[in-house]
Length: 361
Ligand code: 6MZ
Image 1: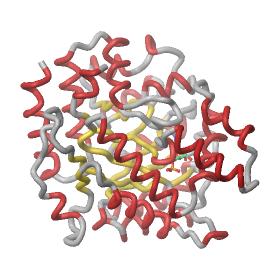
Image 2: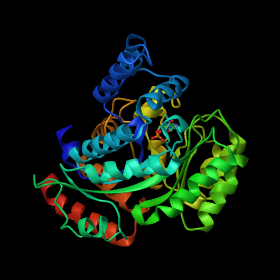
Image 3: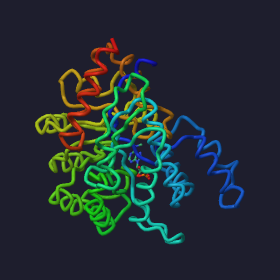
Image 4: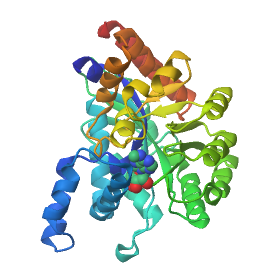
């Protein structure tokens, strides 16, 4: 495990509200319990539970959102999540989150995202490079010298953002999120994710907003095939997104299309097993895709909800699929090619990995 921790890593599929520390969730639940908003003893075991079906996961997200959807807490969890990823040598993080409205406290999707940005700026334990075009905040930090992730120096992490459309949302709400993403491009927002409970909603509802996003140059990644839904899977692949997440319920034609378009897959091993989207690692599609040299990247999905970390996902892959250190290193490095950030960032990341090669043998 130690080796997996020191390995520099790229995280491309992490939901902000799924990546919160248990200790933070419990603390927030205690406070709301004291205020009488929730009953702490009812939610404590829900937060600490380890086995969760997909249905239970989405119930848990409803609870998490009650605990976190205010500006101060959104700022705090963003800061903590970035610190946690950096502490295990994640050198590039594409963090995704669903901008939310909460009229009772005057929260708009924009003010939610401003709280996320404040969280990014508040990180002090590591250097965060997050805003490529913003002279005040980002470009100075962005030009900080690269760090060798393994040498114990102060760590640096690149952070970029994807805004998520929740499958419960209407076309208009999805469009609002895309427009917000366009407005926040200078602050490191690179693209759009479609996520949320996969048994809810229709592809055609989100399509206009996703097309608009693409026309305006945003990158797109879709949760695809997390449940069996052959028509939707084909429609999503025909859209040719830049990446897809999960791909658990693909059939032969879907694999053919995915491979034909060479669409990289964000693989979330622990998430797929815990939610029973894949019955066991022995039959996980990682192996086929890996052997076919199809672009794949290991990710956590929801490190908090599934009690995992990116280092742990590499460890799980190594033992389940018999990968040695060289293969793991290459797998981690290959992820650079599938990030949505520009070539300058890719070059920096390649240097980080090259420096690390020597030390990780
Ligand atoms: C689909 C998921 C997900 O956006 O509030 N989310 N959507 N499948 C999954 N696999 C288990 N895990 C998380 O983070 C939480 C939200 O991300 C999506 C859901 O919409 C969830 O409400 P944010 O930061």
